[in-house]
Image 1 (spheres, rainbow, N blue to C red):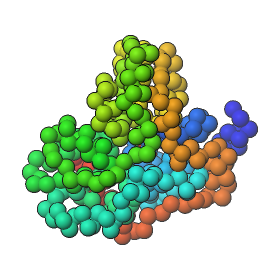
Image 2 (image 1 turned 120 degrees about the vertical axis):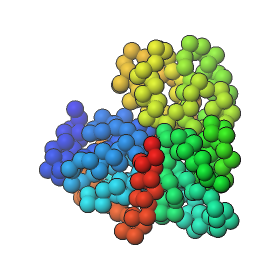
Image 3 (image 1 turned 135 degrees about the vertical axis):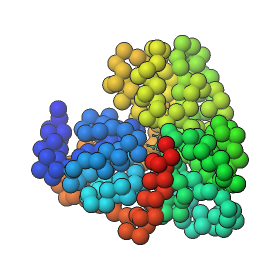
Image 4 (image 1 turned 180 degrees about the vertical axis):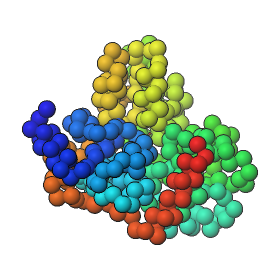
Length: 301
Ligand code: CIZ
Ligand code: SF4
């Protein structure tokens, strides 16, 4: 273990802190994780733990989600500038305007949204449960689904429901092109192709499965296949390798890198623990309303 990692381990104990690390983080950050996972898995671990401090290595909306679920803990980010461009593509004001044009719609929002936007939702969802949730809204006359137009398209195809969406998308996942999949399959004809539902419909149509990161980990673990082409942020490949050392993983493209996810380093985690900064705290009124949308999701799945 590196000197830095030793220092982090020691200080983490003193601070009674837990280090939660998203599947897309750099290998050096994954190596010091107490838990690796997707945003909701990590926030639920935070809520259950008795740690006083949560060091959340991911992007801003994820730390906010942890703050919403555990207001009594101090949630800190090693680099508070790590935002999610997709989440920033819709504001609470934008959503209120959309709702005013569809007053009867049930409002479903992806977890990749700010706390302010979550406060305007009826139901939050993740890429793991979005299809199930929309399937359960049998009586809804109309459904708004924000912010990701590609996830909305995927969910709409899977459920047969028309969804009112907006022009949101993930700048990292759109870097994965249909020709990348075609080329990778030509090179590795035995490999299963698994992509994220934030990819474009053209890419999804060429894949064996469209899966959230949590579901990708499970799929690879349980699959008989030995090789996989991975169509999502490349950081997950380090975890997949570690968890499945006998299997092979090929990124659909090396360009699928989220610069925001890569801002965290071991050095910044150490500074965060030393100074207990930057704290992310969702104000109480927003927190209460946002929490309802998350509770509704947990109730439904
Ligand atoms: O919810 C998450 O962590 C995200 C953004 C992606 C995924 O599929 O896990
Ligand atoms: Fe946001 Fe895309 Fe980065 Fe995920 S990979 S944090 S959706 S920009």
